Image (tube, rainbow, N blue to C red; front, side):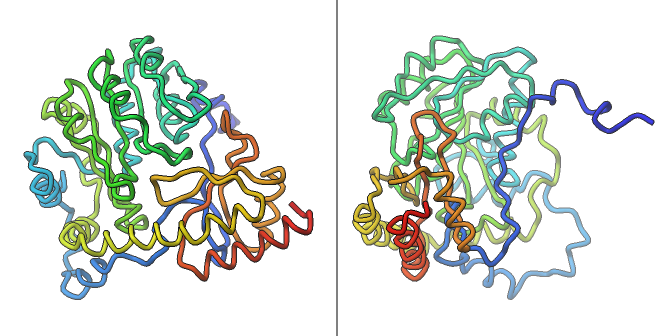
Length: 354
């Protein structure tokens, strides 16, 4: 009998999907940059009046009501907006739409690993350009390969800081192919390059409700671009990608920007609190424009992360990234969670268990 391995597409043999799953639901999850300051109140508000008896019906094929709400928020046309089942779906369909087998995909490194995953899935040739030692961007490197698709995270994950706006604009304006600008953390840094994206000929601004909006469990993402680019993306997107309850919640959440601002303020406050305490434990803590801190650990990070996980706390080990040997990424959280982390870190670091 033919094995499933023999039937698997041969081009997937070298493809490794990054793992984000943690099965222990009691684990303190400071590893995935979700909003740990509570679920958006829009969920309960919508649930009170939502007609769940209508869930037998398909949702809007293209999430039209949410597209209209996003368009009105940014002064765009709904034809310039596409909604996805999380921003990951947007990344996937962009690769599916614009990459022929053998086309070049380009991104800086280190950056969000899923960009490369989707590009490889769709048979791109991967070209990664190393960031400078200070984590800044050399735009000329990203332009020189004339790549079909380029991905930039602004501010960047996992390095946590904004790239120079003029460097990003140069990539947007001078790249041969499509440039995806992922602004997942835009609410935390108060910076947006949406206008620059819309002014560029072939650029896409990708956004998410998973971070500042506190809706990671509902998987809601979107992108804006010129109509002709959005039309191409929609041509390869599966219909009914976003469920109708999630769409209603996202619309309500956009109407409560005060809640988002409060979350951002809390993140910054807790970051100010925890930074000196981590430094006192021997961590080198970098500046951050996101809802997480990148830190160089005072001991080998794989062992430290593993020891913490055994204690019920998950942080991200960044050791496998270029430039980030023995670095970890810590999502900001309410004070009790951070104190629990600090208590365990102090014992592990001071006791030499890390």
